[in-house]
Image (cartoon, rainbow, N blue to C red; front, side, top):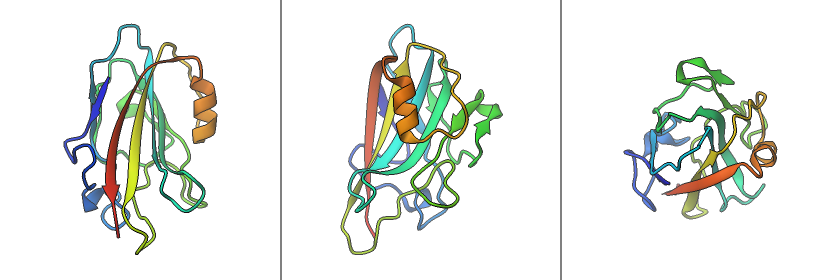
Length: 157
């Protein structure tokens, strides 16, 4: 599979509007070359360069329908997104307001951080519950991953 975004290319800077310094919008993501038999997708975005906890989880989204080939820009920060086929968003690493997409906002003066968007193609409809953490999602999809794709962007303050 291949994961891309019209907002930035692999290894390039994530535009400000998708960060904590901008509008904190989730970027549009697109994927292609999906293998046969996929029943749904899941996606995790994380920053392995965060001082702690490592890695810092920015987005957990799952129950993405098998026929989907994109996530639109600016998804609302809601547990379940009925307009997008019932996909669900889990918890990020924030203590408060920890649901849905959390844009890059590394500590000032700590250099460039990398942000990995990881898409998982699954061989089953798992009907996962609301508000899973990254660890809970990874445990639930273990043994069901048939393909993975990754997109990395950077951001620095």
